[in-house]
Length: 409
Image (cartoon, rainbow, N blue to C red; front, side):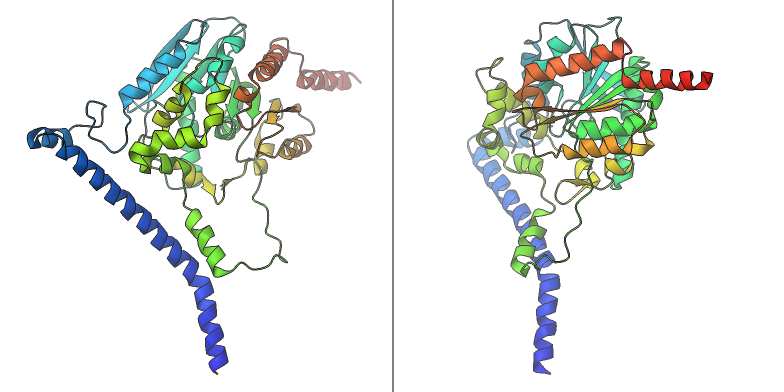
């Protein structure tokens, strides 16, 4: 009997200890950040007269006060964005496009407006914004109008509350993009997305196929299913399971916000590669500062966490829905050879769409930020794809011609 009781207790520990430890870890993290916030505020307040400290406590988060935990503001983000835009030689217009009856705004740029060729719309990835397309816009806008915007919840766009349901949150993104299209009076366009932007661009094309001439998915996140764990894998100890449980709610962007005054230093320490990629344009920390200010602002609800499961897989993988995409819409998938995104998913898309145009391209030497790692090769490839759309020489056109020829006989 003692042996059975021991096994029962061990089983209970193995089952419940990891989530308990995970919850304790999260509580400790929140408590630690709160304490640091309080200490930081106290030290700051101690250095100024009490009357001024009280008035600064009542300031809104608008960049007018240095009395804040995160050294960021909307004004700082605006200034760094303006500096980035100055590197774009083409004629650029920037604006806020109102949606949802003026309750939200989409930060938008238009380059080379009113060009007669089919326009290109670009959707950034997780943690990004329109400023990260700086190495690409001039080249891509030589032959057409280029549109780019900050997704809701990112960059300088509004940060509304998102649904806690994954599909509802995804639909909120898609509805916002469609309303943005209507406000911009766009008919049909070439739609390009990177990472998360590819996921949303594909979802948009499924719901609004009549608006998309060609879908370009660059380093698409959220396409494959989460692999099924092998049944013969050894069971992890409850300590290992505890570590995994603690990591599950982890949001890398939350670290930047929680780090407070040390946030900019963390970006510089862990992403020096981004600075190197944009070194042809900036010899300082401009891009790193842009990324920090884009992500240091407080979100209303973490929509990406809602749409994903541990560790970085989509709750509703796009590979399970790719057959819902109108077969007349051609797709080009672009991968970096050194990326953590598996390019074999592109071949799976090709297999699932045998009667459609699907082209898979791998840019050698590029990582996940393929548009910056190998910007010249990337720009050349995208221009080539867009030229094919312009000249209507895609395989889908040939398929339509073949169908008409078959009808004759």
